[in-house]
Image 1 (cartoon, helix red, strand yellow):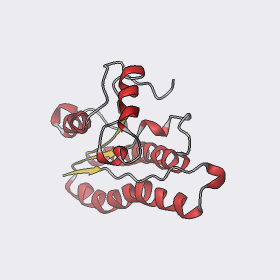
Image 2 (image 1 turned 120 degrees about the horizontal axis):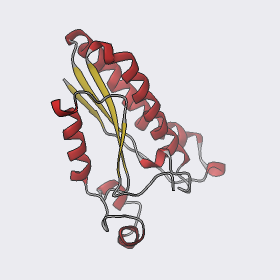
Image 3 (image 1 turned 120 degrees about the vertical axis):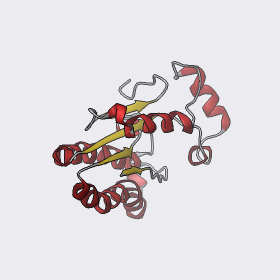
Image 4 (image 1 turned 60 degrees about the horizontal axis):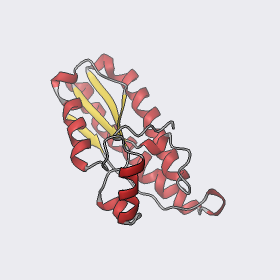
Length: 168
């Protein structure tokens, strides 16, 4: 069995002006949604003594320079912790739990937030490979992690960011 948790919602508001509704909705979609899906899938995986869970987070979990992204960053950081704890709890049941943390990926979600010029500047100035990530880049990492080739990997976070360090 395989579970891939990939949900994201964000509304850019500074902390001092953020509504409680924005904060709670972001945590509910991003973090609680991941938890709820794991809570449903893990008992079945435990019963079968086999399974793989991949949680999608974001480099925003580490990126402290992202203005107006506190709720999103907090939710995605929570996914990192949830991943590691679930891996520790479920390895003995034959279940692997890992996390993929994408950098900037050119997708419908981000195209609604940023103009095309933003993506062009990012590719030129931040990406070490000279381009913005594509959904297929993340899908390729997920495909590897759910495969038998990754059978000894659990509790890890893999950044797919074109070399953009979330710690820089």
